[in-house]
Length: 199
Image 1: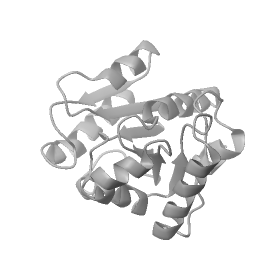
Image 2: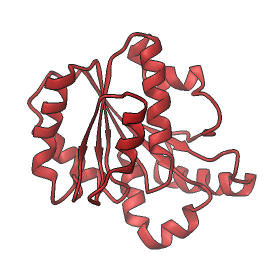
Image 3: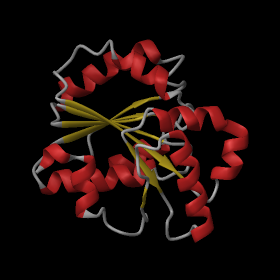
Image 4: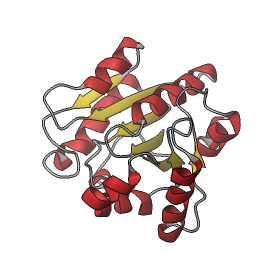
């Protein structure tokens, strides 16, 4: 099984990306399941995913990087046992510390993992404000990423995107951020980059 963790602050477009990735997987007969973490009592993202008839499990009332950390490996194992996916997607809450999430995943003992991929999304429209409020959190998410995606490329101006790219290069010079638009289908080359084992 391939495990993909998609991080990003609230409103960056994680659910939109997940829906596109699952659609791309389904077109190739790759079976996917999704584990969503919401801090509140009601999960909005998982309700949207269930409307698309996706295999979803939710973890509510806490964050999987702290109060629910010990439950994460067991819940992921349950998800895998129920759906037997080829690909599992983990969507932590926007406030999750990705370092702690990855530490909790080390206790996973379910279906063997063939690969682990970490994708971090950033919204260039709000990045400057968020850096002031939750800068260390976003920096941690960026530092743990295998892929960096700048969302809302259709709404952000050239200066905002350039500023986001520059900031990301200072933190992770080895990764080139990719700008994407929620309105567009997931480009084939990006799909191959994020999910190279699928073809």
